Amino acid sequence: MKTKLLLVALAVVAVLILAGCAAGVNPAVNTPGGADHVAGFWSGLWQGIISPITFIISLFSNNVNIYEVHNNGGWYDFGFLFGISIAFGGSARAACRR
Image 1 (spheres, rainbow, N blue to C red):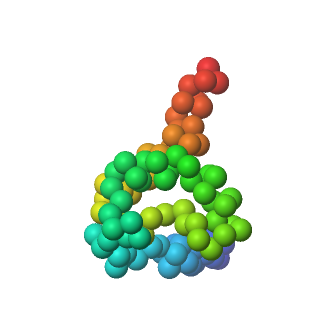
Image 2 (cartoon, helix red, strand yellow; image 1 turned 45 degrees about the horizontal axis):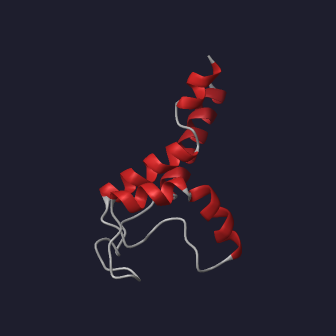
Image 3 (cartoon, rainbow, N blue to C red; image 1 turned 135 degrees about the vertical axis):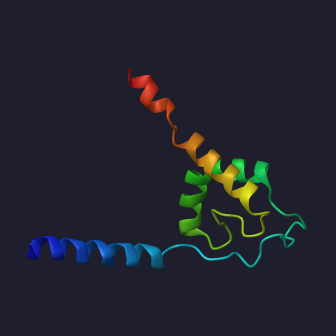
């Protein structure tokens, strides 16, 4: 009984810690960026595809970011996640093993 209670307490603490790491609202959505444009789906897709390389560069440079802050919201996010899935293989890797 005590071990179940302890596991439940640890699970609640873990969920609260993970919830604290969730991203908040982006105040720069739909505001012009450095090149006077707002990043959309295609920019998100491209930046998702090059994200592994961008991440490595961003470790050594303060001028390179992985994620475009000046974006149009959901479509940019969708493109970015789709690009990341392309960069890391997505479900095609599982199909190749067969």
